View 1 (cartoon, rainbow, N blue to C red):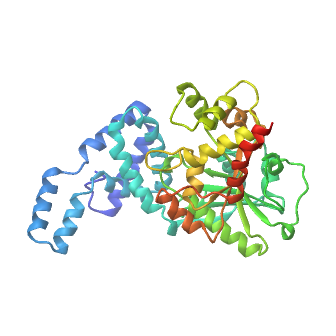
View 2 (spheres, rainbow, N blue to C red; view 1 turned 45 degrees about the vertical axis):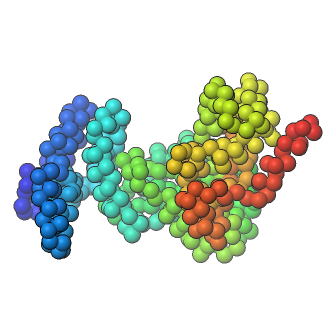
View 3 (cartoon, one colour; view 1 turned 180 degrees about the horizontal axis):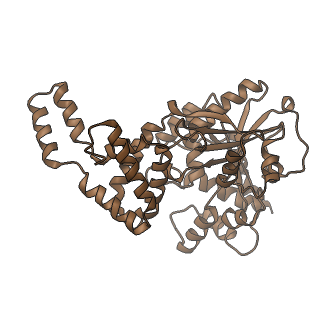
Length: 401
């Protein structure tokens, strides 16, 4: 009925009934629904073949439009109509979240997922996104979601949240969508500082000296959190960072340095895996570094520093992208690898994940466009010359000791 309804009112009424029905289904029932919508609302091959033949005979706009219509799965129109109901957008996002929980065991549903991603990329394009500051005056129901969605550095209390939002040297910005005014899509937390930080505790500690914003020279993006699992594969981060840079530049003319303080997720797991496999294709010094770092004792900082450098700049997927997701995100946005810090995060989970290593990525506005293009074209990763030089000198220091 949702797909075949002719009138807009009836279509929306049926869409509301369908969405409500889906929300009441358990996982097994929802799986059957997704299978049904995949099988019964697919492209019709006969219609597509006829449209192709007709267009090949006479290449005009009418035939092209008809070809485009029949080459789209009919379930997309069902999703479009569901988007028009009350809170339809967030309800579809939540429906896809449940689909993602199913799809790993049922890859035959990837076509349905592709349709939702296709629509979301249109509905959530940059032109629709609204940047809003988040501060201690923001309504409590949104602040509660900031606490819940924080994905990098957990917020354990309202006092911790206040320490990140209330001080005059702290900023937070989030993207919202007009159809989801009370649901942040992604947010970034920013610390205004006098120098580039080397430890996350210097940023997060509640009792600290609060800087006068006019005296700060560095804006530090220390946490970026995606809020909606249902929008996975729909990218917002690059737009967010670029617009936040613009906002900070407007407010604070003296701030010219924009950096992150980012984790290196998976460094320890990758090293342990390589150490067990004894990958002989790696340079001998890197094999030695991995072996040293994977011992039970605490790694030597200079060795760990060099290993992290290699991991972030040389370990890539077949498509040329950095294997580390955080590195891929920032390098793909045009940042450069600026500094590497050992003992930067003493939280146990960080120690277990990456020996507590964190890095600064630098957003130099004059080079982000070139860096982005170079990374997309699989050129060498953009790295600070000072960092490269210090890594090259590490071996000499280690031998000297």
